[in-house]
Amino acid sequence: MDGNAAQTATNITTHEVLFRVGIAFDAIHFTSVLVLLTALYVILKRISPGIALLATIFRLVYALVWVPLILNQFDALRLLKGPDYPQGFDVGHLQILASFALARNLDTFYLGFLFFALASTLCSDLWLQSKYIPKSLAGFGLIASIWCVISTFAFLIFPNFANVVNPWLFDPPMDLFELVLSIWLLVKGLRPIAEHE
Image 1: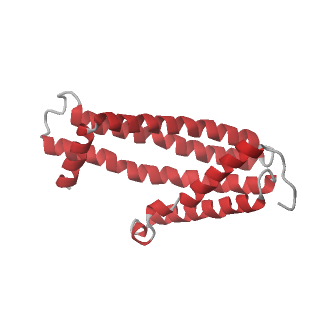
Image 2: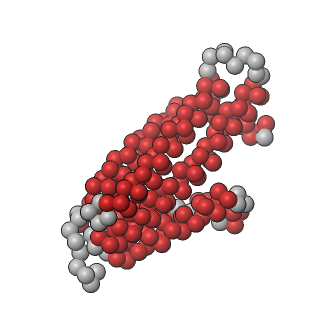
Image 3: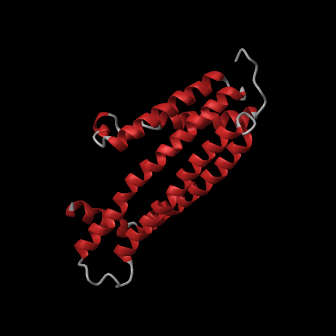
């Protein structure tokens, strides 16, 4: 672990500006999730106010998870580049503490990500009921979101699940759905589509 911690510390201190840019983008992501959950609630509450509210709460939990993720990154940076207050630690210990602060983000992210997948599942079901988008697209979103919920639950309960299914495969179908949905809404708007579609 010392080697990994030292390499991580070197990468952070050598590319501090890029590291800080990453933190800034995380803050932008946090803000965009808040905007998105508000918009989705306004649109989907017409279909089912209760389910739309629950989906909004789930997305809010996911958004709030980004606060400790961002703070952990500042902690790591402060440990590696900050003032001399951690005088009781040698460089190796500080590198390990910084690495631990960043490693904590993985668990925090996947806990929050579960709520994101649950919100996407509920929203996909509401899209399916709404007839605002093609049923095939909404159905794909529902299946992709359920896959993400199952994969994230499995990963949280059985960490070795990541050896069976790469964590990078948990959400690409759901991300693809949200991307296509965004394009559809930008091009077509919220007009109900014909039944045969």
